[in-house]
Length: 258
Ligand code: CAA
Image (cartoon, rainbow, N blue to C red; front, side, top):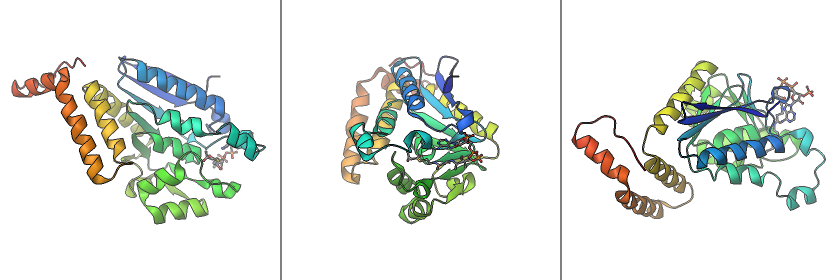
């Protein structure tokens, strides 16, 4: 059985459904290899504007595969750069990724959800970094991305105790952009947002993702200067001419070309 089901939606965006039900979508290495290969394919496909990653109603993903990890030695982990491939490749994708989280998003599952550009969830979703209960710590960016998303004190509490939070709480704390009352509504909204993003200028969407991500790495002055340089560069695109001409002519549906 494939580790995920991929679906092209009207040729404009892609959705990927993690599909390892017997292990609550635990993220074994072959699954992540396949997922990253698919994301890279979509990234290079000029027809595709965005990707939605989701799981089942009961599990987005229950984390890294504990059975795969349990006998690893330090040497194995260090020399193979275990798990580096996950975040390095997933976060190198240039087109927007939306995670639609239902059920458990634990450990690496929570980390994968946070690697996305936009996170939606249902109110009954469960987010957590329970690695401390296994005698380890988050290893795919959880300590960094969770802290940036919800603040140090809340992230410390979750990571030091291994306690989970609900989807409702994730919305209140700013981890999720939006929270939905059911899994179906959550996925539907993620697909709608992917479709909306895919209808925009691809060059502008790529630039927008790039500059927002820079805000996570640069100080304010450098970030604002970086943004302005990229803003200036868009005046060299066809889509800037097309978009502004359409506004002036009261045309609601510009035909983007870049
Ligand atoms: N790795 C491997 N197998 C897993 C798994 C995981 N992360 N999570 C669940 N499974 C397996 C279980 O072992 C079980 O397999 P068997 O049927 O062969 O026994 C099957 O999935 C179903 O699991 P449960 O019976 O436990 O299902 P449940 O509905 O009662 O509980 C759960 C679901 C709360 C998610 C529970 O399975 C659980 O706590 N899983 C582990 C969560 C976890 O600790 N994640 C962090 C992993 S470490 C990590 O991710 C490091 C990192 O930062 C990258």
